Length: 413
Image (cartoon, rainbow, N blue to C red; front, side, top):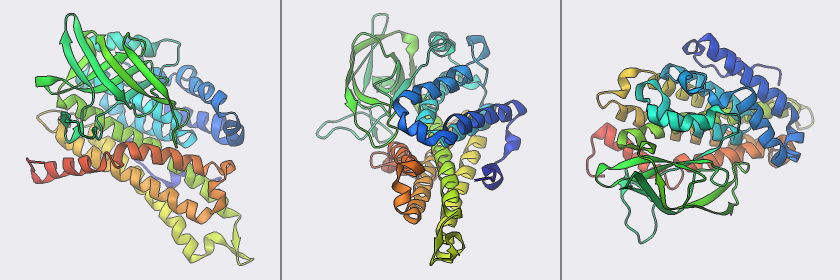
């Protein structure tokens, strides 16, 4: 495809400064040169090339340190004004490989809860920054509340079961939980960010080093998408962590969800954008009835339009959310509930939109859409996996209840 997707899928570039645009352009070069232009080679040697390409992005280009404050060895994108730039970068990485982008999105979401100017936790930054400011590739994993266990009463965070717990012990806290399922990357993780039940103080976020005593990982889990983000169930046997490794309160957990919805939305939209490029290239050379170009047939053109429409609107919604996040007043005086609600709604809608776009395109492509050489089927599997995490069976109902509580002041659901 020889047309620039930025000219087709518009977004408010004026919300980014020159540095942000420059970094986004650098990441696009990485995506095009390292992966998109070498799809077959990348797919045939995926297990070996995935860490190599990710290392080039995170360490050689330096994105592993992007959102760390300068005083902690980072690049200093630690203000909420950088939100549109971070979103753009995740979209660009997602165009190339949603698995690389998903790990980056989780990392940025985790760091956002401790390193941004409006909520900086200096002790935690001092503890965690060395992990990401060094020369080793790091993989964090996130364990969120879930659907709960049959026959077992669990404390809740906004209708979501808290399956891990933390309690005070001499010198710090102990984290416990059995067969907890990270979003992805649990087998690789050197840091677990765990949303826990904290007793009278309500929900909290605990940061657990992957090599801490008492951390037990199960066997690798076979997954449909994000295959390179090798996952495993994790059990915490009263794992001891220092006091500074725990952030307490609903607001911290809500902010974590805000960043996840925005950034994983960017990952899926990036994958959807590359699917559009694949579909566009494919449709350029297809004819029907022996002589009519497929894209000139009104029925086929309608399907192609559905794909473009869903992706374009998803991207606009995400940048609207990014702009909302950048308003400092939204994080004070209880307004963060509004950001949380809009992030949940938009995150859910974006995942649904991108999934529908790819589904419609695959219907048109037929067997070509499911053939590995077109790469379309990998985008579908990856996006479907991300969507199932944020707005699937275990998550859709709580999102609806969050929305009802905010808009209708519901107090008993």
